[in-house]
Amino acid sequence: MDQALQDIREEVKTEIDLQLTYIEDKGVHRLLEEVISSGNTTLTSLNLWGNNISTEGVRYLATNTTLTTLDLFNNKISSEGVRYLAANTTLTTLDLGGNRITIEGVRYLATNTTLATLGLGYNRISSEGVRYLATNTTLTSLNLAGNEISDEGVRYLATNTTLATLNLGCNKISDEGARHLAANTTLTTLRLSNNRISNEGARYLATNTTLATLNLGYNHISDKGVRYLATNTTLTTLDMRGNRITTKGARYLAANTTFHLLNGRRHKPTYRRKMHLALGCVLNQRFHRCIDTCSIANMVMEYASE
Image (cartoon, rainbow, N blue to C red):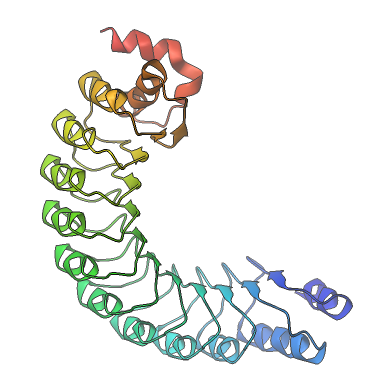
């Protein structure tokens, strides 16, 4: 912290990174006072990830008029602190993941008209809270991974017409939720890993014509679901790790002509190469660990011949 303050005195900065530096509310106050006294009017990005900041510290931060990007992931911020941040009119990117935010905080954030990217992963947000966020018309990217969102919440989000990127990993979403999301026509990136989606949900998602990136890792999808997804002609990135896919499903994936990334690995668009990558998820299941498919090509092909 002291070194950061010294740096501010000696050089006008546009970005400051103070993640994991044990900063508390008083430290935030001290930091902002130093920024003001040094005449800095160009600070636009501040990373305070993994500190001990609560409502009082957030109140100081919310008064700043130059910041556009603020990372407060994994602090001690409650819905009361969020009320101050929601009133800020210069922030466009805000990460509040890993805090103590509930429906009340979400209601405040939904009224903000400058935020474009918002991270609320791993809080205490329910489907009812999501209903408020879905009404926002400026957000284009929203992270709600690791909350308590069910199909009801997804139904609200699917009606939003400004979101392009949506992360709903580690929630309670089933095939019904997938059906609602499949009907959305603005999303281009959708992450649904670690939910309760089966082949029926995959069938719904396969009909979407705007998604370019889709993550369905660690759900309940088998070869049948993969066959539906492989018919999609707009997806370029698909992650199916941790599902119930055999070599049969891998062949469906490999036959698709639009995928450029399978299971998180880039590849040349050749059938053999895509077979290597598609079969990676089969091996991941078999050995219950993540395997780099590039380094085990021979092993993959041996398994494919079984």
